[in-house]
Length: 274
Image 1: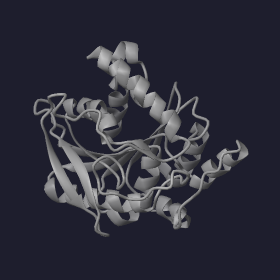
Image 2: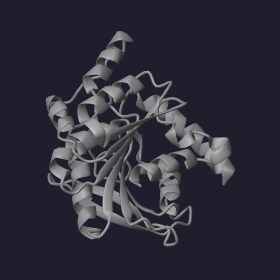
Image 3: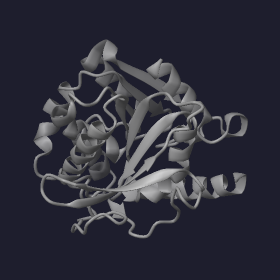
């Protein structure tokens, strides 16, 4: 198992580095909850504009069940199979975990993707559909979103439409201003484009009124700690920011030798949710 986790870390870091530059969907699954012997359900979810998404629902460990559902909105590379270990760790800690593939990723319906875009506004429709479906299935549980990098943009863009269904947001590598990222890469000689409708991001960000936890990496030059703190100033007491040693999207790897993969991350989540 430890060897598998080490292999995962190498793969995940590779995709984190790659995903900073462009959208990079992968169709084939490298593992599933079944290959790791975890109890789960596969679900097809329809979006409001007619796309079919693949989703996996990981059953919470009944001995530690926290009566909380966590929906994973992952970064812009790979597919949900790259987050099976993340999801099992959360599920073993007592969270019902829901993963899904954006349109054009994994086994979700085909969607033409221009890799030079930072994100697609349509991905917010995907998250809205997942939240809507899951909130109806788990009416007696708290429901939150775990966003990673591009997944935090998607979470913000979707929030005005799902705010009555979401109890909290957790973000690692939180994007507070997509235009700043485009400008950053322009200065590096790399062209990244924003989709139509990006002008709604700021108003969507201001609409967030649920508790939000931002995990900011000290060595992350793009989704920086300072930008997270500026966001906290705007959102007020509902927003908490935790600084950790590491690079972009390495929150699950903090204190790996002493706490194991995801150990530190779980502590932050449990303290945040109380």
